[in-house]
Structure formats: C-alpha cells, structure tokens
Amino acid sequence: MPMPQSMRALVAGEVGEPADVLRLESRPVPTPEAGQALIRVKATPIHASDLHVLRGRYGFTPEFPTVGGHMECVGRIEALGSDTEGLKIGERVVTVAVPAVPGPHVAGTWQEYLVADTRRLLPAPDNLSDSDACQLAVNPLTALLLVTRELDVQPGEWMLQTAAGSTVGRLVIQLARHLGIRTINVVRRRDAVAEIKALGGDEVICTEDEDLVRRVAEIAGPEGVRKAIDCVAGHVGAQVSQALAPGGEVMVYGALSTHRQTDPAALTIPLSARSVIYETKVVRGFWLNRWFGTSSAADALRALSQVRDLVADEVLSIPEGRPFPLERFTEAISLAETPAHGAKPLFVFDDGRNEHHG
Image (cartoon, rainbow, N blue to C red; front, side, top):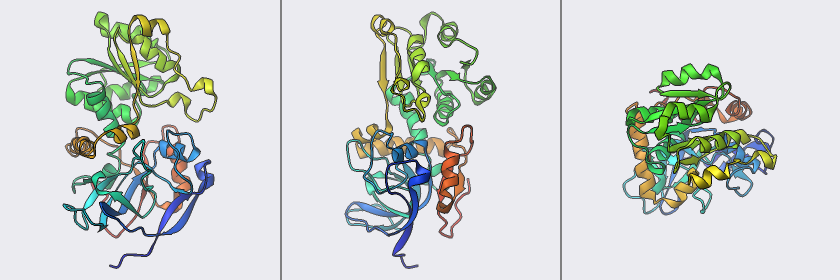
C-alpha cells in the first residue's frame, strides 16, 4: 500500500487550556533522516503532564504550534533513514518521545506518523497489547527507577510512599512485592485502604483520620523508615520528610497537591528545618525527562527492556486503556483529568490490524 502524503495530527496553536487550543489538522507525513525511523502510530496515551505542557505549566515548554503528546507510543516502522541497521520495516516498536532535558523536543505522539531517533525505539513483542506497550515508558519506568536505581531499596526494607492508589503507586506496590520490599502506603480516603491491602500493600495509612508521622513510627518501630517517594508535595510531602528516620531520604516526583494550582504558596513543601538539619535528611527531586536527558541511550533502553519484561511476565500489571479516535479529543482530554476516572484514555489509530489483544 503506498504511503499517504498527509496525516491527521492534534495540534495546539498556542499555550492555553487544551480543550480550547487543540485543533485536528492535516499535516504532511514527515520523512526520516539519518538515524531516524518513520513510525505509524498505533496507540498513545493522554497523560496529565501532556496537558500541563500545553498549559505552559510543566518543566519545559515546546515551540508553538506543537503536536500534543510528549511521552510515549507504540507503532510500526514504515520507513527508515540511513544509518539504521538492525531495524526492519513493519517491526512493532515502543517509541520514547520524552524530550531530553536539556535537548531538542521530540515529535509529538498525537499524530498518525512521527519520526523518531532509532536509539529511542524498543521492540514490542506480540504478547504485549497495544495498551500495555504504549504505556511502558512513563509510569512503570518511573516506578522501577525510583525503587531500584534512585533509592536502591533492599529486600526486607521498609519504603514509604504517598498517593498509593495512583498509577505509579500501584506499580510500586507490585514491584515491591516482587522484590521483597515492605511498603507503607499513604492514601487520602478511608475507602481506598482495603483496595491497597488487596493489591499487596503491607501497611496503609489514611490521612483522612490518621496521623501520618505517628503511624509511621508505630509501624516501623525504633529503626524507622529511611526511604520514601512522594508525588503529593505540600503539607503531606513535609510530613513524609518529618516521619523519616535520621539520614532518611525522600524522592519527590510529583506535586498532586498543587494540581491546577496557581497560588505560589500552594506550590511548596514546608519542611521542618530542625528535622532536616539535626536528622540530616535529604529531599531530592526526580523528573523522568531529566533522567532521559542525562542517561545514555543504551542505559535508557536497558531500563526500558527491564520494564517491558516485567510487564510481559505479568509481574507489573498496567490497567487496560480506553481507546479514543483523535476526533473525540475533547472527551478523551476531559476523561484524563477526571478524578477516579479509572481507565487511561488512549488515542488509537486503526491500520486494519487489530492488536488490542493481551
């Protein structure tokens, strides 16, 4: 079948609310250059961070107009530039579109075709559904990197995490069980406790009616907890730092408490200076974009391969996404930020092959 000359793309003309600034446009199909592959996109998720990029409220701002979607997708190689040995037309691959920081912005994923650096392509085995494959490079990778590389949590050790019911939180629980790590999981609502325990969380603290610092001390005893991950920030993030044993470290990888906030006072973590100084605690940030920007392509693909294998072996379970065509983007974007929406919305492109098995 001959290659089409044009394709559909979801383009934001300027910074603003995604539903207001995004338009479905026709664009020419790009041509891969040396070291690049042309990918026909099959499925790509809508992450909250994708929407924050368009609002100008993320860690980088692309040049506008820009194609939406800056994280990940799965597709098939349609054409190859020069210097692309080892890859073949028709091969199914995961594309990591996360922009390296510092570095150039990679083509947005919310379009039918995109060009990608071949060093950022990971083969996707047939036993991975499109839904699983297009969600490997952000949440499962974040969980793996935080637990193993950033904090190096050991079997038998306690690890404290906030927002345990979030996508990354659930993956951390699954990974910790696999690695023999004990988790203390913080949730906001009492009705989430039973679900987190059923997932395999060892202990659950509900901030609705429990004191986080006191409960951590009761659970962990005199040795305490030395390692934590936090994606809430604000007051809860400060409590996590306070709850850690001397010399403890918390990795902050998100700020859910500041979601849609513009008040500068809400965008803080009010740490106790005495606790940080006298107990020599560390608060450190983690941003996947920066990790990609500072890792070699080979190291990034090694970590991604590890994640792919954990998902393929069903150690990590990614909830099935909910497919949307590009035309229904307003509905899909709305779903992406609906509290407790359940399924992650995915833009899917039908090329006549049904690969939503798995």
